[in-house]
Image 1 (cartoon, rainbow, N blue to C red):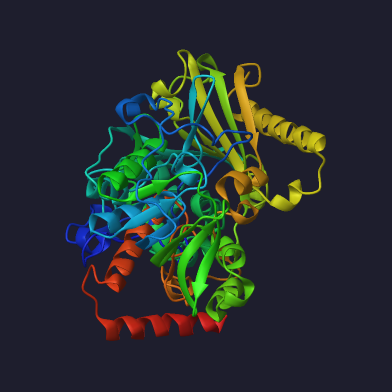
Image 2: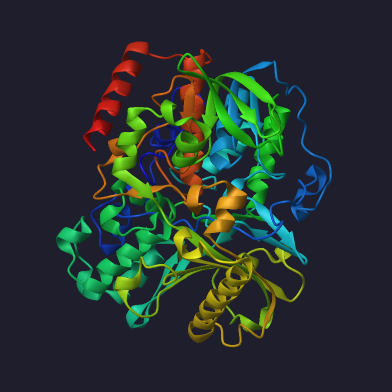
Length: 554
């Protein structure tokens, strides 16, 4: 989770963090024990983001009366009230979780909101698609902040704000690591059980101090910590902000990781329904091509079909690069944004493989989430080396036909590796790279995996760019050097009057819980600026000036 991504906030004047801090989890309060307090110091783990090829995202919106099965429906969600002349309080570009949360929380405050989505289902990289009886998660399936406990159960709160809830399935193991030197570590839901697991692997570090790099000497342990951070931030522990690690690594043992019955896509579907029920508007196939400016202020948007919509504020759920280099004209990019792009660079994208397999290929007791790195720790951040694996059907069998399981495999990749290929070469390369990754999983976890495969679809960074409108397929910014702490990344406000950002390229960064935080925080900021909430104009101006100055130090 990066400091510049807008991801955390709540209804009213108090944030969820402030609200929940009145009842802190045992893990977040205690720093006196042993090595297992280490996760509080380091990075958060969220399996984020994957995509699909072809028409995958062009499935129909799910029928609200059949959500449990995520069944197809041909009727779009209402777009009543959308016009080229009506002024809204807020236009939200993109229905990722950050955009949905911002839109819903503004709507419940009484704001007139229209949410514009390029495709025909909501959710962005937290959406779903269906193939051959399988319901695949597009991206993340490790759901932090999704319970009735914990310090940062922001997904639950966001749904509750619009009168929604989902049936949850507890995940007993957050992730099972398969690492060099035959190091196998399961991150158990129960904190004490995870503590025992860590001590058994690193007994000589049992009484280490608070800060890993200062007190811990075991190179394998330090490398394991890097892996814990990499799983969400795609960078090692030294480049992962402490706040990101402490929030998620603490919370995963208090409230736990929970999977929504019917798939991750149901979160977005429920938020979308909640938006419409609270008077908001949601328009699909609404491809925003330009943010309209007047006298230096963002006043609306233009769609690819020529339609224009106007509002008092515009909230972009696109990446910083898409927002400031594509939706805005070059001359409208503020110096503050140029400073930010010196401090941060694009994170890698992913090669993703969605597979359906015969159930018997999975050993009994196989966990839902895995990270595999067989050979050298130094390869952790190299493209195609670290394998992330989700098997959501071990938690929810309804996502696949009887006797089948879903494997969602992904690994980091850069778009440059997929440019300049003919269509035939592109397809051949996809299958060749996927074959190598499947062979690695056959050797380490699932013998006979290739022969047990009944369905396979491969996506590349170009897939993520095309269907999720992410510049170069990126999933937000990563520090160009050592992180500058909380102040280094932009929050929801921008130097363009009337324009706000939300999502994984603002504070606090990547991950479903992070963008939920961003969305609620953005809604609070916009609501205050529009007069739906109280604000302290003097304090706001001073803080904004301080943050803008800090980002000039690039």
